[in-house]
Each structure stands twice: as structure tokens, then as C-alpha cells.
Length: 147
Image (cartoon, rainbow, N blue to C red; front, side, top):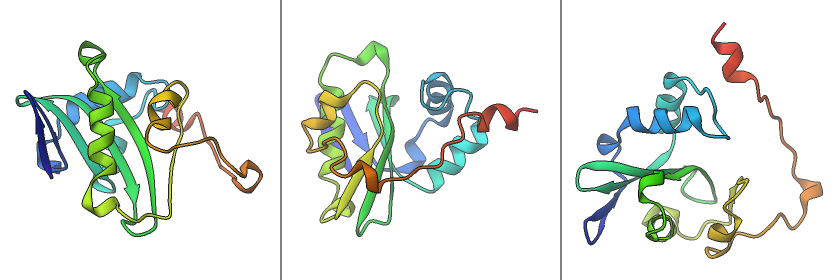
């Protein structure tokens, strides 16, 4: 997939990803603070990734952890601060939602602290049955890896 809008492009080509940029952003994010580069690299290999580009420079990213048949977990979505406010996150979401390998899925999920309004536009809603969901969270996993 390689879609264009004006000077911008969204691609699912893993060879185009700027791993340095992705790692730099994620290690400073609230959801993946301190994430080691090797963990980012491994996560990219196991996901359907989307790069957002201005020319050849990557300016945004998202990845789907998916079986491409029934389920997708949307993760690590970002647009660099210098490019926000131009509708690029919406366009990135449109590209992801329209990807041929993500059609007909029974369930999508994501976790966000502050972008509920964006995701609501693409059909995401609060958990309908939160009592059915369970999680195992280890917020210190990256800190322990450094030791």
C-alpha cells in the first residue's frame, strides 16, 4: 500500500520505516517510555506497520498487531508535533481502516490516554463489557531491562 495526498504519503512498506525516528519518539512517549531499541525493532517485525511521510522524511507512524483475519490491536500511533493540526492523524487512520488486510475483522482494540475523539470518528467506543477484559501489565519492564 502506498497512498498519497498532496506532499504526504502513507506506506505499509517495512523497508521505508525510519527505525531511529520511531524509537526516538516511542522512548519519550507516555505509553512506552524508556523502550529499548531492540524491543521496538522486534515489535515492528511482528506487526503490520504504517509510515506517514512528507517526501522521504517520516513524520508519523502506527502499527497493528493482527492476525489479519479476526482481530487487530492498534498501537504506537503518532504524528510528530511539528506536523500536527493538519488532519494527518485522521488521514493515517483512514488509510489503516481501509487497508485490504484489515477488512472484515471481528474486533479492533486500542488503548489511549488522550485521543478518544480521534478514534471515536473511526468507530472505537469505550469497552462495552469491561468486566470481561483482563490484562497483565508490567510498567517497569523496560527499566528492569537496563540493569
